Length: 158
Image (cartoon, rainbow, N blue to C red; front, side):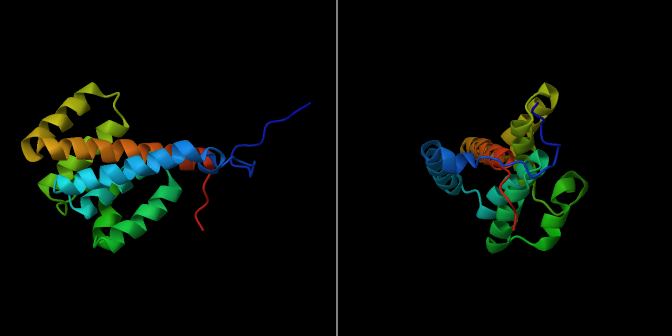
């Protein structure tokens, strides 16, 4: 009789990025193209990292939170703002552009609430350019993909 490992046990996971490197490398290339698109749309690297972090918070991806916290700090983000990112709506430390980007990234991550999606998109249309809206959505889509790879592979945070 075979038994399933208990939740949270150290059952061996396949690192899907290592097991199937071609699709992973294609995702890395997509991410690089998205980073370029964001820069061309005049989205500062800190905004991109705030999106990466907020989406990773929603998804509970420890590995990506670790990677992108360090990237945000390298890009000039402050520990104060990173510390309150999960509650960004309740602070005054984020600009209107950052708030619009975060809201749009959240509804890209959790698109099932049509009312929230329409509200976030309406705010984005008031604050962001078309190129910025597109870039924000692409940043959110790609970090969501990386989150799923790391979560399902159980990439360790060391």
